[in-house]
Image 1 (spheres, rainbow, N blue to C red):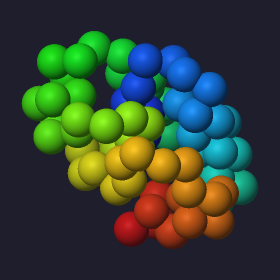
Image 2 (image 1 turned 180 degrees about the vertical axis):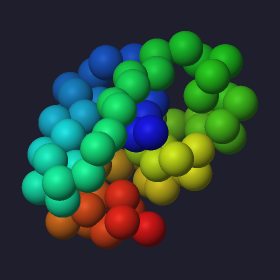
Image 3 (image 1 turned 90 degrees about the vertical axis):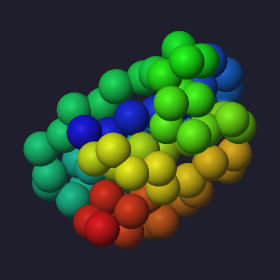
Length: 76
C-alpha cells in the first residue's frame, strides 16, 4: 500500500500525483491512500508533511522527491 501523509496541501497533492505516476510506470498493482489524520501520522513517527509510506515503511518526509526517486522507493 502507498500512503501520502499530509493535510492536502499543494506539496501533498504533488507527491500523490508523482507517486501514482511512478506506480503506473512500474506496472505494479497498488492502493493509494491519503492520510490526513494527525494521530495516524504521529503513530507512524511523521511530524512533518508531506510524507510517503510504502508498505508501512516511511520512505520520505518533508519533501517531494522526483518520480524516478519514488520508483526506487516503491521497488524497495
